[in-house]
Length: 230
Image 1 (cartoon, helix red, strand yellow):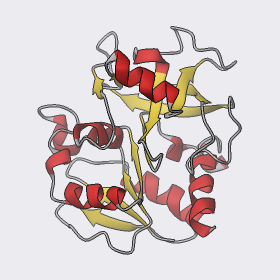
Image 2 (image 1 turned 180 degrees about the vertical axis):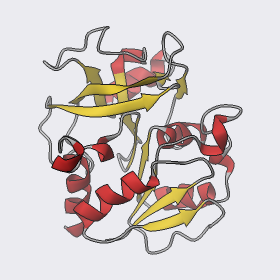
Image 3 (image 1 turned 30 degrees about the vertical axis):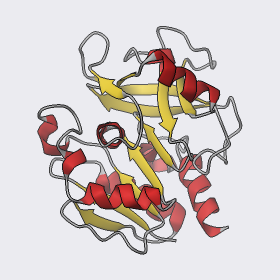
Image 4 (image 1 turned 90 degrees about the vertical axis):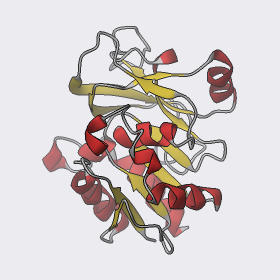
């Protein structure tokens, strides 16, 4: 059971992600520099948050064309697991591994605060340790987290059970106020067609230990670790 974290210039959440993976996987993840192209031996590849290439052009646009991304696409094509958080989610959409795009937040302001997410499906290795409809807390820190896609794509995501998480209030209601970045249908995270690639904007890796202020995000990593051991 081996995990790799891709490090792009400007990424700043790789250490947070490494803490979460090591805690739940029991092994130190491999740091993969963006020019590497050999991902052999890895079970899961993680694209962490931050500001790859300074967010020039569009968030994630330059990172999506790094040499490592051909290897990430090949890994996903073989059925490997891929997790992208925040900037990682942006990179996944820019690279075509997930549909849609992340636009500027509604109100055009950077958002840094706790948010609440509702688990929309447990039929994936990333969410198996939650119950459907369960609500958990996760920090958000982004300026371009407004998920958008055409209506046909949104309908397909909903119909295929590929919406993983939705922005809600603490009681689980998908209110306009809870959807702070303005994402279409309050979508916070989506899955690929085979449900082995997950992208989400908030940071579950920042709540995996009581010393961090809570363990709300730990089920994601425990779910993935459980699946890879089985």
